[in-house]
Image (tube, rainbow, N blue to C red; front, side):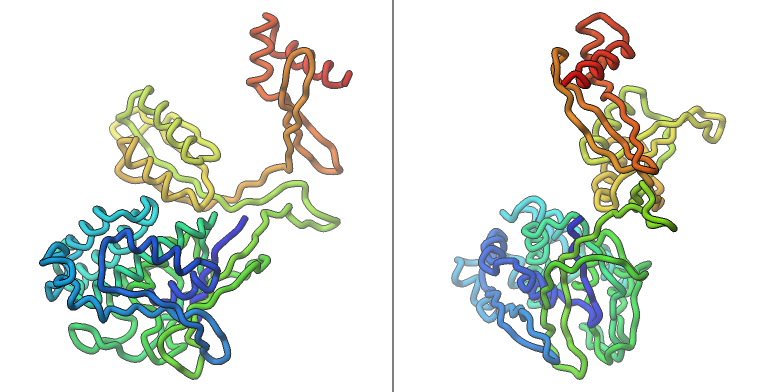
Length: 414
């Protein structure tokens, strides 16, 4: 599996993330074309090669010097959200929703910005829609956040992982005065995630950087892990310090290998998956059947309905969905969109499965697929896929067992 990994040993900010994406191979021109879909003028995004403590990488520079006269050049206040003193989350959300950036990037950008607005709303005790971003800060954040969302669309990783996040230390100047690091919004955004402080005496992880990670990372890794490093990019931070102020982003190859055991490898694979479950007592059988279809269409690996007795002796059903970690967000959304549940449980599970392959058999019966599983000592067990047995059984008006014997017999003759 090809994994995108963030190594935030010196924290993360919006511009460091953009630099790292370009360092990993995103074409700056493709990124600028994507950002043009915002329909905003008054900004320029450049990337320069720079180094920190001997590590070279891409340094993203957002130039907003053109934004003050933006309204004059575009005939009045068509983009009204640009030249108020502040820009509210409601304005920015409308701007993003009406923009022409790609759907995936739009959804990701709305999610990242929404997380920041919620955190800032909690800190300042204001409704989320009224959370204000200072004008320059708003423009900067829009370029950083939408840019990161576009880069993720371009790279299309199967899974995103991240190590422990360095927050920094000391004090930080905010719009509301001087506060200790991490800033309150950063603390809220990274709640429950593995962080550390004190590696640097400055703010190293900004709310924008924190929100990008909270939105896109599928798994935070703190234990040792084995992988092959395929390619690495570095995003250069603004400050020069004694330690390298860079964000490392890499492509990794991680294989679900067979389990090792004394005397050789076990014949099975171990995969880390997630089990999503909800108890439901107010859906019809038809609606549950439709729900099952939606889950399988969206990439569920397995799904079962288990009858249960719920409170007040109501009969209900437990919906259990097995999925890869990177699909959890999509499948969670299906729970809320297509079922009546108002919550579901997520449990990490290990799945052990025999190595297997599918072979195609051909003969007078047409084509049939045979699934072969490898067990200990190189032995195999196999079965003919149900759909192929059933098709032949219907055509010849014979039993499923007879259809299997016919397929195997014809397959062996070849």
